[in-house]
Image (cartoon, rainbow, N blue to C red; front, side, top):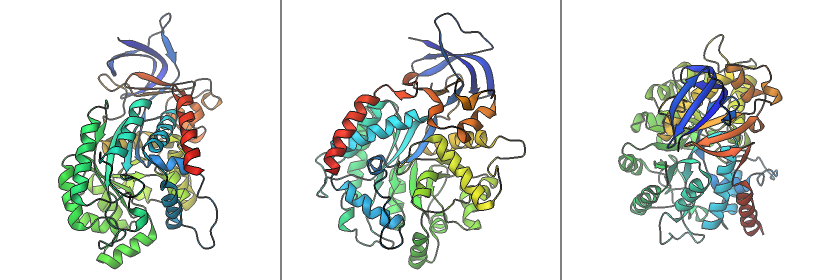
Length: 453
């Protein structure tokens, strides 16, 4: 049955418009009226935005948020954080995976994300053996997305080695590891299961250059075909040093020279690049997957965003470790990191006179959608009804109009500005709360008591 929603203002494909009625049917926008008054009994909402894609998540890590913030005896880094992560996942089974992913996905919708790219590498049972259904853990991810209503691009991860040059995996990595034949079975099974989840898609993710050999990478790219290809790259300075020692080239430099990087690809992090790598990546049309909250939490470093964007580079944002799930905070921290490094303001606005928050929001939406092989996040006739409405009574929105609304969302507010979220025309979030929050949180509490006892 068709539904209508009246918005006092909405960010449409053509720009901001006032007094907008959207007619929705079968999950899509089938009518757009401008300059109209609300009808009696019609649903009325505040400023409307398209939902934002979250291009990079490890859902299970939501359960360890805050557990790796104790200083060790020597310098803490990504590598010491990784040891905490290995210990945490030792007790995660399928039901725990489902419970944690469900909470993460509820929080993503409440934060204004309407689709996620799940970079999924926790494949096997606690003893490292494959499940009878090789995609068992992927099924739990799909189940969580289906129950919460979040759009999903599932990215099964191939992980085979502990370091560059095909080093043998460590015992702590046993739950991640497959050979190519086993991974092909897992990938095929995940594709089959995803067919039963509305709107779900499947891509493929070689974990990183340290976890795959060049030969394996070539085979994986062929297996992916036209599906999205995501890969971690150049996140850490040590990773760059190790890649140089192995190949004589830096990670992004090696990929650009040896892999068919194009618009299908998302290079996650790409933090440590030379100017030549930055320009080279921008020219490929690939998306840089930036995760500012996690990159700050892990002490990764700052992505060369001004140079990349000036060269026409495309980017999206992701919540990665899910230590904090907040779409506005990802965009804010992306800009603030550049301000701190350069000691100036409004670094990532595309040109003089542009609103920085608005430019970041629009660019992250376009880049994230490309990376997840999803429809562009725009409100227009025929588009999916993936809509975020803001609270018109929030103090941070008083007197704002046009792109000032987005600037206030990004820089002067956060999740508390979000009132409602629709995904595929279905209202999942009302007054800032997901409709299944209470049940999901109860299940999460039970799972975490088992994991942490």
